[in-house]
Length: 314
Image (tube, rainbow, N blue to C red; front, side, top):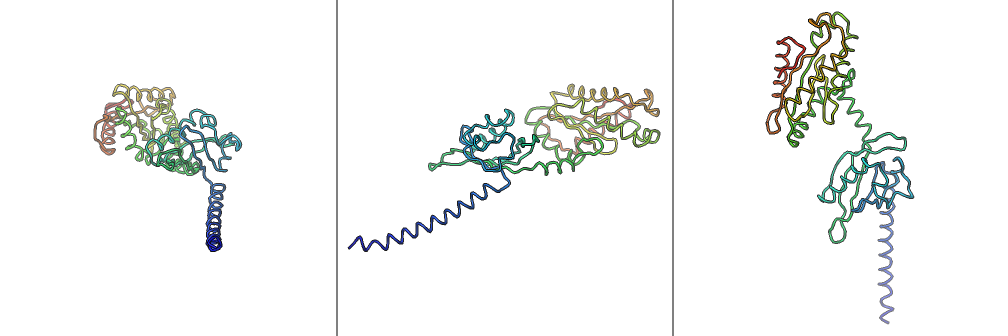
């Protein structure tokens, strides 16, 4: 009798469980649909770097094989330099137990290198311990290209004044962190107006391109930055161990430019295109803003002109 009395309650419980299961199935379908169709790379890794889940969008990547992707380490799936950047950011998210936002680069199937903005965050087990990481990445390659176009000088290919202003604080912080001397070098072409007046603006454009080439030839280390500020005015921002090294790098630009041997009849005594430069320095512990450092470099450039051009002044 008691068992019969319990039957309606059991049927109601079963019905409730079925309703909840239907809701869960619905949620699961939505979740799977998001995973399969969102234009994002979504994956999880264990704490040894093995991929435990990856959505279907990973098929855009070079070398992706759905049957052999999950369960393998990033170091088995990607070139060493790419695998290291991917795993480094996962480790940070797990060790610091926070979301980490970084740009990462991977190759697509067409062998082009794409830039992704990735957020990585820790996952926890039932005891509240980190046991995995999740990564969600969106392709920002086109956005980066558009942004790069807006800060790049079309004639020379150098970054422009806008980018110079954007990067200064970052470079100052990096120099301070590394205990290095930050150098701002301003330079321009001696008697450039007279050159344009005599040889014409197309020839003047070729001179500006030669200046840019000379700057790149001398400043090619990671972290060296070259800019066209406007007209025939250029700037370089780089770090060094001291003023001697900084001035030696500046001298290499003059040497590279001299190698072009571009005639300039209105620029005695050598009658070739030459550069004047002004250098200003910011020690690692110094507190000096961009406007102040720029003024110091501009004053040094004026001294170089006053002393006879074709030289570096500080």
